[in-house]
Length: 69
Image (tube, rainbow, N blue to C red; front, side, top):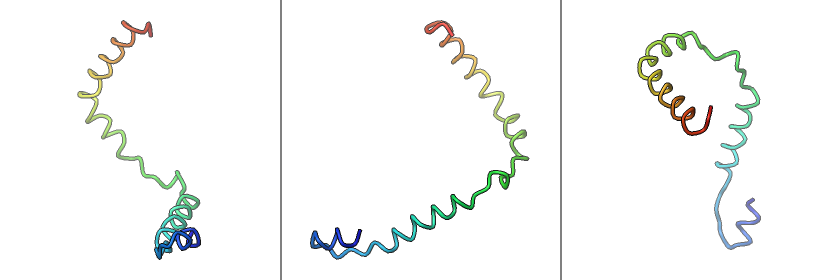
């Protein structure tokens, strides 16, 4: 990429951006879903259920009324 920018007459150092992209891909490659701690999920769902359930009921009613779902 440096050659392209130099050809345009720009002296921009892209090494930091390239390092960031490589680091991100290395993190994605090493990532393991089994390492995620989901123990708090049931408590979170219980906490938001009183808010979420009426919203979801309204969405279902709308979809059923106007789209036959």
